[in-house]
Length: 80
Image (cartoon, rainbow, N blue to C red):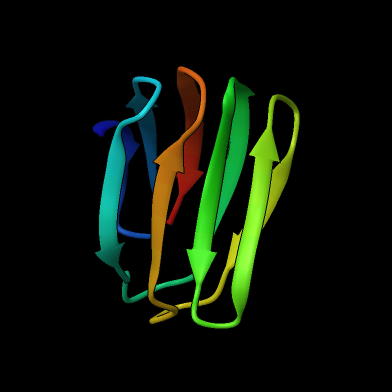
């Protein structure tokens, strides 16, 4: 994950995962908005799974534990 822009109000990160790569369970202290640029990944929440593919968006509430597993090479922008 690489920060591509930040100021005191928000950050924009670029997430790149290779097919089969997993980001372990974690949470952030603010809301996150994901915009998928390429590929497919499974986001696992306590309440269930969500599959994200190219062009999809997803809001993740602050402090919501989740993990990310790429089923294809995956690229997304995340705004915190």
